[in-house]
Amino acid sequence: MEASPVAGDKDAPEDCYEIRLQEHLDDHWTSWFEGLKLTAEPQGETVLTGSVPDQCALLSVLRKIHDLGLTLISVQRRRAKRETKGRG
Image: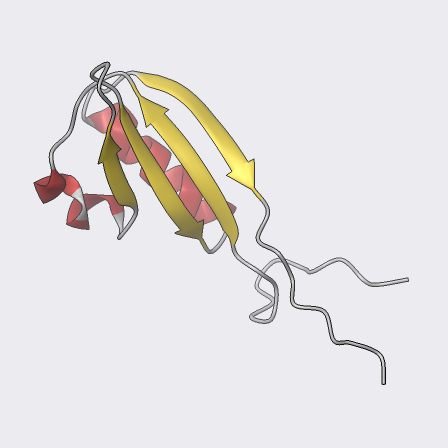
């Protein structure tokens, strides 16, 4: 049985998140959101996507969203795929 990664384990895969906002943000906000990719959707929403190293970093992003008064629509985690070694 494979052990679960523990918090702070540098070999643990980072989780990828998709954070959807009601507002439309332009590209100059990218650095403010710690390197997450910003995608403007046609209906006026913005989708932030990218890897987040841990829950503390995710909370930091969510706090920034709150502090800016933006409307959070959803947060979805997409688990990063672990590389598997083939058998000989």
